[in-house]
Image (cartoon, rainbow, N blue to C red; front, side):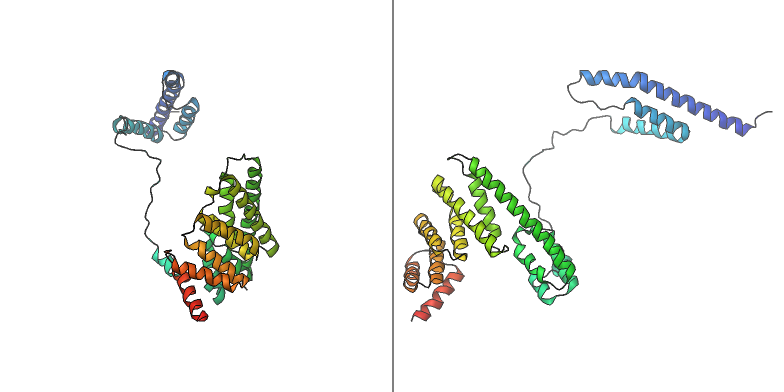
Length: 324
């Protein structure tokens, strides 16, 4: 029985392909890989090379796909030799760890359809409310917890459940982080103040949104005041204007007039020519209904050279008219 010409040519092609694949496998396993390993051992920099398993896998693929795969590997190697035969010149490339602020173009289509979460709750359109809520969740939500709290009262059960889950998760994170910092404060010596500063700033950012129950809000505000007292004893300079004002306002919200007045005096003592030194006392005396102290502070503010914001200016106008 003789083979036809086409069959003989096909068998010869398979034989040549098998022989080429076998030579490639043996050369890779016994010549190329040992040579690359020796070069890698003696080199100061890392040398990348194919291992024996890679050559075995290529051998199998070359047997299963004759002619095409060997030609593909051969042409790929030629392309590598002629195109990537030189190392990249990175002398003009500067790698820097400095952050670069990228100005991204606003997405007008998205921004045009965004409304405040409070308005979405008031309108109570499920689609708009869910869209706004998702947009809020995609950002840093620590400054939006008060708005998310409003979503708990939504008639849309899906929105209220999702808001409750997110709010519960954030409040738990707050409790855990506060407890962690309080424990670290106990381990500090008299010269360390980092944890106290971090705790006051972190707690004020959350507590001023009034998202806790009355009992828990009081508990955390008292912890914040105690931390501020400890920081005052360690290094009063570290109690900045913003931190002293924050302690005053949080205590005033609890109607702790005695503690608030103590911190108002400390604020005025350290920053006598700053607006919060007057506004904190004005809010305190107004809450206590101490008319005389209120108007004395108001008069002192008028006589000072302190720059007054629009809110305080309106307050002066209203009470000046009333007093007359």
